[in-house]
Amino acid sequence: MWARGCVERVAAGLLGPVGAHGDGRWNTAVAVGVTAAAGLALVVIVVSSRRGGLKSPWWRRRRKAALSSQEWLGLFTPEGKLQDGGVKLLKKVRSGGIEQSIRAQVWPFLLGVYSLDSSEAERDAVKAQNRKDYLLLRKHCLRKSVYSNEDRKRSNKTDGANHAESVSSEKGEDIVSPVGFEVPEKPSVEVEEHLISEEGNPCVSSGEEMQDDTYKTSPEKLMDGNQSSSSSSNKEESDNSVLTHEEMPHKDAASVQQPSTEDEQESIPRYSNTGGNMENDSELSKDARPVKSSRTVEDFETWQRIIRLDAVRANDEWVSYSTSQAAVSREKAIESAKDVCLKDYEHLEPHRIHHASRLVAILEAYAIYDPEIGYCQGMSDLLAPLLAVLEDDNEAFWCFAGFMRKARHNFRLDEVGIRRQLNMVSKIIKHKDFHLYRHLEMLQAEDCFFVYRMVVVVFRRELTFEQTLSLWEVMWADQAANRAGIAKSSLGKLRLGAPPTDDLLLYAIAASVLQKRKLIIESYSSMDEIIRECNSMSGQLNIWKLLDDAHDLVVTLHDRIE
Image (cartoon, rainbow, N blue to C red; front, side, top):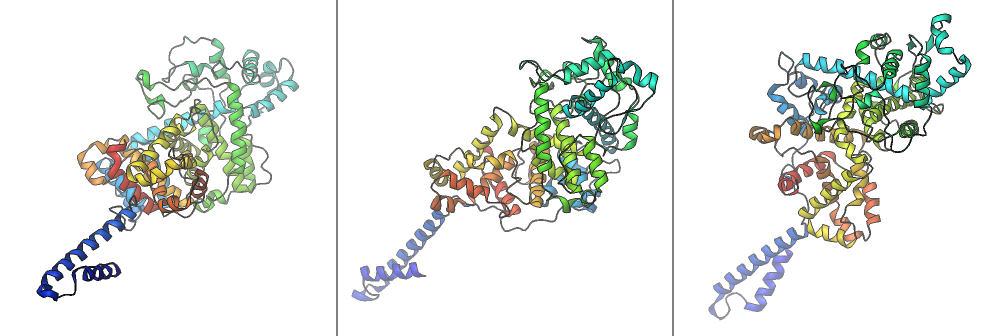
C-alpha cells in the first residue's frame, strides 16, 4: 500500500539500510513496528473521517418479505384472536411491511381501532358502534354546514312564515336532505328558528364555545333527562335523518331515517386525552375526559372552506392502489359531491371528484370529533393514502382518528408538539454526530427547522406513495407495541429487536439528515441550502435502508434521548 511504502522509505532513511553496521535485524524489527503504527494511524484517520456515518447492525440484510395474506390468516386462533398478543404480527410488519391486498385488514389493528388481543366478536361490536358514531358525526356536520344551510334558508323563504307546520302534515310533500336521504318530518317552528339562529349567525363572541347540548354532556349515553334546554331534545327528535356520505351502506342509511330514542340519548363522539372514542368507556377519570375547545361556529365554517379548497387540489397518485375507486363513473362521482355539498369540481376527472368528496366527508367529521384541532392544511396529505387503501368511509375515519392520536400535535396552534419533535431530532443528531451538530450551530440551524415539513406531514412529501405506506405502517407497528405494553416485556423486547418507540419518525428524519452529513458539512453554508436539499429528497431515499438506520439510532440512543 502507498502509505506503507512511504513509511518504509522514511524508516530506511532514518535507520539505514537493512544489515548495515551489523544490526540489520534490529533495524528490520523497528521498521516493521513503525509500519504497523502507521497502518493503525491510517485506520484511525479513515474511521474519524467517517464519524457520524451510520452503520446499522442490519445494514447488509435485505428487506424481509412483506406480511402475506396466508401468513395473516395463520396468525389467528379459532376464536379470532391474534396469537401471542400480536407480537409476531408486529415483528413481521416492522421487518418487511404488509402486502397491499391485506393492508385494509391489518391497519385497524396497528392504528388502535381494534385491540391486539380482541376476539372476532369483540371487533364486530366495535365496528357496529364505530359505524353508528361516524353517522352521528356526519349528521352533525351537515347540521352545522354553512353550505347545506344555504339551501335550507332558501327553502325557508319560499315556504313562508308558517311553513314548518304545513309542509309535512298538510301537503304531504317529501323533503330531500342535501345528501339524498329523505327527512321523515319537518322540524317545528321553534326548532327551526333555533337552528337558523345557531347556524346562520356566525357572529358569535370569540369567547363563546361552539356548543350545543352534546358539548355540555358527558361522553356516556345521556340517560338523565335534566337537560339545560328542553328544545335540545326536540331538535334531536326532529332531525332524525342522518346526513352522511353516500358510501354508507343503504341499510344503515335507512335505519337512521326513522325516529330513534337511542340516537337522541347519545352524545357526539369526541377525541379524548386517552385516545379513541370515549363513548365506549363507562368510567372516565378527570384526565380522560374529552378535550374541551373554545372553537366557535365561525371556526367550523372556515374549516369547511379550507377543506374544500384542499380536497379539489388533491393529486391522484393513489389511483394504482384502488382500481375500483379509479374506475368510478361520473354520475356516481357527482352524486358523492352533492352528498357533501362540494362545488367547483367541473374541471376534475370522476375519480378525483369522488376522492375529493371522501376527503371532505371525513375531514369535516374529524373537525367535529376533535374541535381543539379542527382542520389545518396538511391533514389532507395524511388522510389521502388511507383513503386509497380503505374504501369504506367509516373504517377510513376511525383509522385516521387513530393516526391523528399522535399526529394531531403537529397541528396545534401553539406549535408545542412541533417544537418538541424538532428538539428531539436535534438531540439525536447531537448525540450521534457532534461534528455535524457543530456545523449546524455555525449555520444557526441547530434547531433543525429545515426538517419542519418532514415532521408536519410525516415524511409524506419526501417519499413515493408506496414508500410512504411502508414507513407509516412500520411506525404504526412501533406505536401499537407500546400501546399493548409489549415493549415492557423482556420476551417482547427480545423478539422485536430494536425497542419500539412512538418517535420512530423522528429517528428516521435524523437518519436522513445523517446520510447527507458530508454534503452538508462540505458544501452548505446556510440553512436555506439545507432546506432545499431536504425538500429535494423526494424519490431519492431507500426506505428500508432508512428504517434500518433509524432502528440503529433507536438501539444506540433510545435510553439517552427518551
